[in-house]
Each structure stands twice: as C-alpha cells, then as structure tokens.
Image (tube, rainbow, N blue to C red; front, side, top):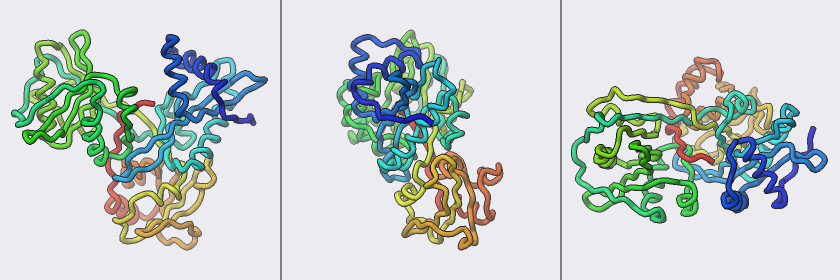
Amino acid sequence: MYDVIKLEREDWREVIRMSEYAFQKELSDEEREEKVKALENHYIIGIKEQEKLLSKLHMVPFSVMLEEQEIKMGGIAGVATWPEDRRKGTVKELILNALSIMKKENQTISFLHPFLISFYRKFGWELCFYQKRLTYLKGQLQKLDDAPGYMRRIQKDETDTVNTIYNQYRKTHNGLLKRSKEHWKEKIHGMKAVYFSGEGVPCGYLVYDIKNKAMRVVEFVYLNREAQRGLWNFICQHDSMLNEVELTVRMEEELDFLTAEPRIKQEIYPYSMARIVDVEGFLREYPKSRLTAPFDFKVTDQWAPWNQQTFRIDSQRVQNISEDSSGHLIECNISSLTAFFLGARSARFLYETGMIKGPLSEIKRLDDVLQPRSPFLMDFF
C-alpha cells in the first residue's frame, strides 16, 4: 500500500516532465507555461517515495449530456509512471483513490481515453465510445442536391454560433461535453465553417484543416438533412484543391449511403471508455419519466464498495432494497450497467453474451422502456 497525496503547484513541473517522457512529446518552454496554466483546472494525485514522484493521475471536471440531462463527469487523464517504477501497483492505488474523490465531488460518471482497453476494464471502465472515419478520394467528391441556405467560414474567436449548434446537437447523444468559450478557443483547433438555412438560422458546422492536398474534417455536425447536404456540398467545392477528404463522424453517420459512390474506405475504431462512479447518484440523476414499473439491479463492483448493492429504480425515486425482496432481479457488474445506460450496448446483447442475468422478460422490457440515446464523444482530454 502506498500513500496517495494531492500534488500541489510545486509538483507541477515534475508532473509535466513525467508526461513529456511517458507520452513521448517534448514541449517548448512556451508550451510548458501553457500546461502549467491548464493544470489549475486539474485535481492531480500522485505517489511519492522519498520525495521522488513515482506515479500520477489527473482528474478533470466536466459536464456531459445524458438523456438531455447535464451530469458531472470526472475525466481521467495523464496517468503515468516512470518506467523504473512500473509494476509496483501504484496506478491501481491512484485509480481507487480517484474513484473515492470523484464520488465526493458528485461526479457520478467518469470517462477516459485508454492506452490499453483491457487494463481499464479490470477497474470497471467499459468501451462506450467509437468513432468512424470516412475517406473520399478526389473523384468521389460529388455534390448532393442543392441546399437552399449558405455557408460562411468564421474566425477562430467566433465561438457563439458554433456553440449554439453544438449545444442543440448534444441533446441527441449521450456523452458530449459541455464547452465553454475557453474550451472552444483552446481545445478545438482548425478552421470552422457554418451552414445557415435560407432563413439565416445556423444549423450545421465543420471543424477542419487542409494540408498537403488533404482535408481532415474532425467535426461534422448538423441538426437536419438540409444542413448535412450543405456541409457536404461545401466540402465538394474544394475538389480542385484536394486529393482526399477524411471525415471523423459518429457511428450512425449515413453520408456514405447518400453520396454518389458509397464504396469508400470506412474505418471504425474504439475511442473512449466510461464508468459509473456512484450508481445510486447516477440513477437519481437519470431521467425516470418513462418508467411505468420499477427495475431492480443487483450490482457488483469490487473497486467501489458503495456500488455493491441492490437498487430499485422507478419513476419517482431510487432506493436500496434487499435481494430477497425482488422477484425480477437483473444482475450485472458495473461495466455492463455502464454500457447499457450510456447506450453502448443493448440489454439483449449483454444478456445473450452472459454479461447480465435475469428474467428474459425484464431484459426485453429494459430495452423497450429506456431506449438510451446513442453515445458519442468528440473531445480528447
């Protein structure tokens, strides 16, 4: 067992030095100063041995959308250890400590970008977010039907319009982060272009860059099909400048079906993981208006003992019950519970693969009644 401590400002230079080494990115003096400023928003814990920092972990506070409800999320980032100090169990100690801290901060859910998915699965995080890449070659850049509106490229500091669109779009998915003006300016890099309807209403935007005759679109966001056409047609207008366009989109994106040549390169890759930190707190925040009859969940979570209970959720409340008092018990571990409520996997899939247990009638009802929105995450932290 190691003592986990909160790392203060005097430790931050060493924290940054460890990150540079672990993530193989050497920063300039200016970039280091920017990092120090960014760390003011982080809660950083670490383990020291004789004043030497062995390992560290960052928790970054966010607000995310879940079924049109804002909830607090703890983002795990910057987990690192000096190579000579690895395999001593220090990261495990940091993770367990982080779960307790996030619970105290009412961060009922946590996201992270894993270096190794199997490692974090051991601690209850589950793969919930994927992204899809579509790659179009020059000859495949053919416009769709005309859209009645117009496109306008905007300046880097014009964030209000894109944020208005983004906030409406957030409501259609589970997991998208709330973005401040500072977040847009400091974290969302690239050129931006907005689609306005014929009435002048902004309803779609792109974040992209162009380099070496290739366009990389990292955000392709639209609120209706008209905006989807307008954004795509704007991309096609660059055909004389490009040999290739790569779009990073949500899993359900159907642009390939709509374009003239759907036989394009498509890649699906795992992006991020999620974990419910506090089941009771999470279920209290979860919208319950669709529940006409209660559900009973027996949850196992070896790393967060406060979750190891049987919960009943109905349209009015969440309560702890005895296992014997339930006639329709759904049994699951924290990973499977997270995957279902985030919309990453259906209850039927989890049941068929042995990840949850219970009466089949209850499993079917879970899918029919709750129908979680699809998960999507664009940010990296």
